[in-house]
Image (spheres, rainbow, N blue to C red):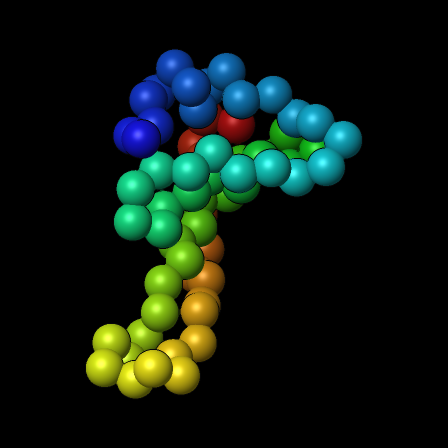
Length: 64
């Protein structure tokens, strides 16, 4: 599911952090403080069966 600008702007803080997921590992992490952080979940070494899941943060959502 693709995230829309409206869905991102309307994401309200809750008691615990939660994710609004897009496709292929991209998600927006919404913090209880109201902060929003873009993250990407991925696995490196595509041929390695023991590859480890990693996450990288891009930047805070400029609209928050």
